[in-house]
Image 1 (cartoon, rainbow, N blue to C red):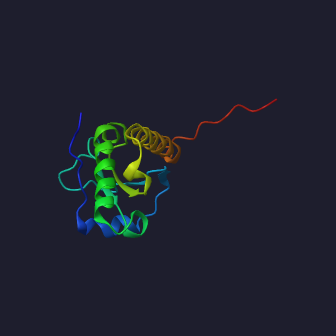
Image 2: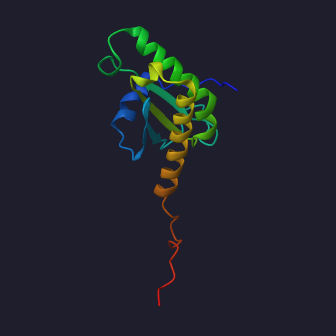
Image 3: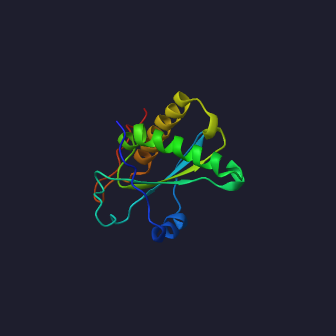
Length: 143
């Protein structure tokens, strides 16, 4: 089921590009970076919504807009098919497109999208700190 991909406004791009994030996943057709929301954008629910942007640079994908647009359309369709349902909500996602996205097999693109969502989920679980006042789980001592 295809859903509409929510975009990011131009005013918010500067703050997003300046935020460091360890939530990254690199694949053959694209690299994706996740940036958590500090406060939810107006009209969006951090438990239900996420935003996506695509970077298709001339240096990386070529001077012809045909190639950049085709790569963007293919990755956007894959995002709307799989990534929106699987990815953690309350984040901004930046997809940096690579040349193989233009001609890659559709199934390979879908598989990479699923891998990206699962990797970001696992990285998010690793980064989540324990709530204040609760000690981290202790491992039993070896005897």
